[in-house]
Length: 262
Length: 262
DNA sequence: CAGTGGTCTAGACCACCAC
DNA sequence: TGGTGGTCTAGACCACTGT
Image (cartoon, rainbow over all chains, first blue to last red; front, side):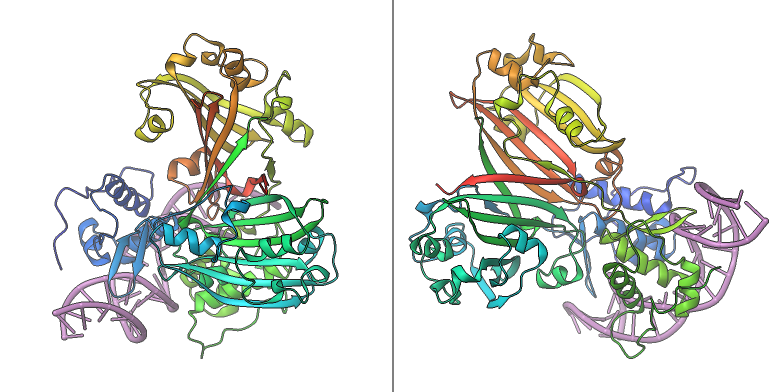
């Protein structure tokens, strides 16, 4: 068992009201913030900290659990506890659905990822007819049935986003939109070809902790929230023609919007 | 010690690979999802679960810690563990800075909260001259010094948002913008009076777990992420005139944007 | 194999809350 | 006062990782 780097970690303050495991977490957090442990670096092992601070193992584990909850560190079974690397973020610009970005052979996700030097993938593609949930139904103008297009997006092998598009069935049935690959420009290009010229999109953004299913699907580390984005596309007649429900790994995204000052 | 409601919680599966504390968390989560425990309801106490499942107390606490991390429950010392109530959310629309919403006596936050029937407050107001951080400086066109306006927003007594506005000092010094209360319409109205007609805003949105300081300032329960919004305001000459750095309790907000289809 | 984190036990004492 | 959660100990056995 290696000795601790000298000077990085100090002593506990027995007179403090602050719980011991919080004091240990504070010291580790400070060391990380100061760069004494860099991204991907291994923190001292549980056994080392037990010895250094003279506390029980559960106390040390409790400290790690605090830092995990903050998204600062990542435990790897059999290896150690590491400072969580910040993954490259994908920037979603508010003009990402502009017509000038369509009419190319590939989807917006693929084009953008290629440009950023990442390796994009789309999987678990599924196209189904369904009865919509109450929320989706209300947003789409209460259709009885919808076409649902599900897919997961990956960058360099890492899942970053899971999305479901819902379209009124009477609008999408027996069109290229019901095909797994709807063709160049994606479903928005197809919608316009079908006479539904797009007017605007509404987007709603929330952030929350993931459900167990989302943790699995997006392979999320603990301490990583999700961004939940619900987009509704309207045609020039004011009819909602698509609702897209997207869940993104929050550490992989920054959303950018440009607003006119009116 | 009261008996457990019959039938709500089942038995453990000793043949399962799933850890006991996860099985217990799964059962509680399912009961919450099904509505068997509603918002604000008290879950069975640790002692009751220890008896019901025949496990040690740490195992039960570990289950609760899982659910806390998911933001599902809230422990209150001396009282019990409760299903976390969903607070009313504040909807931020993308036209919230439109000129037509200014020229009133009160700030946008106050007007909007009054309309929604909430009791709004603004506190810890502080106006200071500072040397900007590297990031803020770059966004503002590298001024040597800036005016910083800090404030915290509360709804019905609950802190929901903490914001800092930065303005180039040469632009804001000795103007109403440097006053604690800049007057009707806020600093955007004052900027336009000073000849900086606003053209557009850029907004960047991230979500992450809060730092300990943010937990304190926003009184965040564990399992609640923050939304980090950075807005830059540009005048019609393309000059950045303000950067506003905002941290919001994610469970209190939904952000709404309208995008043209171009 | 030795070292790491993952799970679990069976206690102990404390601080907070409601009655 | 009794019940609640908060902290901490000192063990135990297991699963995973690397050499």
